[in-house]
Image (cartoon, rainbow, N blue to C red; front, side, top):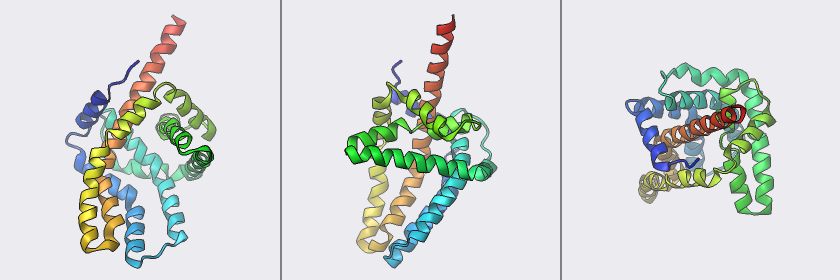
Length: 224
């Protein structure tokens, strides 16, 4: 089944209609450590691995809840901000998924950049799958993502690439700020991307919804 990128993005905009401000707020809460980290390192012009660790820890605490909210938005459900904290009890499993994905992508990247990028696309549905199936194991979530994206990697790449204009738009104010306050470049860029991130995440969620619908139809037709 061919998936229309225009339709995916149109559905995402419809899902976000009237919810943009709330999703931006939720994304800020989700990304707060990254914002603080960029601000501190930019101002101090000093890298500290401690903040990287803190950022990874906080992200692992919140990413399950954030992806849960993103999926709810894509399915036109009520937004419950408290879901952001839902993943706190799944911290170690989340951390395990993030580490395993990082290792796999890094190993593929050692061969060349392109295999690493393909691997990243293959694993792009991992957290959506895990939110829908929280009982499954770490490797199974990653394996299911690889199976689900099989034959659709080019479409996922096209979807991600279609946001290049939005990303460049987020880059403009960062470049302007850099001319006056070079130390605030990374912080401003991260802040700009926060506005774009809900659109990208909900679009990927809609793509995921279409993939699981397609898989369900294939399984049904197989048994008929």
